[in-house]
Image (cartoon, rainbow, N blue to C red; front, side, top):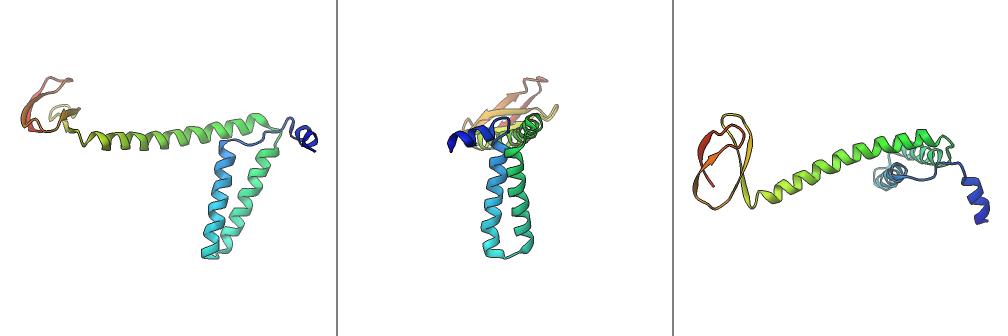
Length: 131
């Protein structure tokens, strides 16, 4: 039986990250529909599941690969944005971030040093701030 399935799947695309995401979205919508009882959600879940199976059994591997790459690029932009925000939030506990009044360059200064004179590394403007 396993050999028959393996032979059947030869030359077909199979699963990838985008298919897993679509399947997860379909499951979330199914659970949401248990509480909302909205007919359009049933249709949307059915369309998503059909599309997931269409992608899995597709023989147009190049097209499915391009769709997956586009999804991974979008996912990468979103996750990198949130990782950057998380890192900056953690950094705010240790440092102050000031903008240069002249060139608007962001400058990171350690907290708890009192009143200090800050020199902008970009335009060499000096200004005084409390850290």
